Image (cartoon, rainbow, N blue to C red; front, side, top):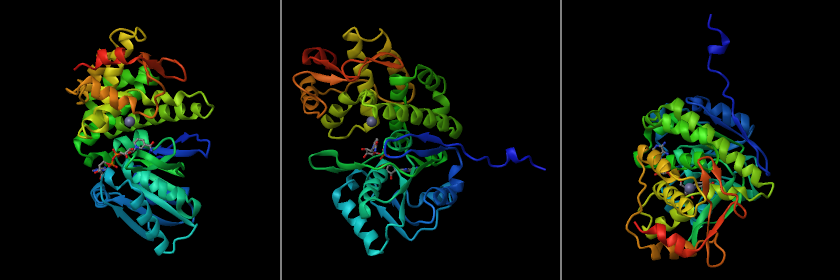
Length: 367
Ligand SMILES: NC(=O)c1ccc[n+]([C@@H]2O[C@H](COP(=O)([O-])OP(=O)(O)OC[C@H]3O[C@@H](n4cnc5c(N)ncnc54)[C@H](O)[C@@H]3O)[C@@H](O)[C@H]2O)c1
Ligand SMILES: [Zn+2]
């Protein structure tokens, strides 16, 4: 007789607390074997509409994952270009045409694009219906699945129209990462390194020690990675709801990353830009005497082991500064950064950001 404990155990989810309602994040290799059951548990009795993208739609068969029974199946063209108000409008109309009412829930299976766009459809459809999120990229698992942000892009910038609408539940099965293209996979790792840098030195050291297993996409190691990153982001976001402004530390590396993405015409992947941004902002923190010496080298060493770029490409400092000054987070002539003091600790600054004068920034932007 097999003891009950060795039968497929009940996965214990991480509870993410959010002002608009808390929700469980299941993170277990193989958890999608229970996809239909978990959806039925978290949006009970609801009619379902599945949203994926054209790349992800055929993958459940390859993963050996059962899909819940749904009344509508919608697939958007894969890629950031789909995160528009036009797609939002088409998807909403498709649900209306099928006469799906307020007893409907969405199931979002895909990366951050499906999550952000589908989440915004759910936030607005009949003034808001619930959704279950099943992130299938590393970035969507450890970053986009926490915080309840949904959005579409506009010609004026990314993510400018959206809503806070947290999911009913998030289901993460690291086994689905087996099919993710290498560049997408590595890109997501930059955010995990960021989480270690901003909040948890032990996690940073664990990533260093686990770099080979992570690169080999060992599902148990990736489950540990996603769990810790989700816990860190959830803790930072929920602290922020008490108005501490601490959420700003999640922007570590991103002030320079956004400038690099823009200057490269988005040829750099987001995670690649974040990797270079983290190292460059650590150098800035060192040069200002804020951070312990050697922090930039330690962060660069880890990112390089994970296959990410760390050296500034040959853009002129002027061009990067111009892109940063246009960043909406900045006030006045200085540019604000979320800067580390050591691995695992950020500078409190004013509202967890530090205002830096342009000449000091320019000094470290020379490739
Ligand atoms: N809401 C948030 O808090 C938040 C946080 C971070 C990023 N985002 C958003 O996330 C988006 C980027 O997300 P992304 O990087 O997941 O991009 P994405 O959704 O475009 O996915 C990247 C590519 O991988 C493919 N794919 C997805 N899962 C796959 C799998 N398991 N196997 C093979 N291919 C797979 C997709 O079809 C796509 O081509 C951006 O729009 C960004 O603004 C949102
Ligand atoms: Zn990011």
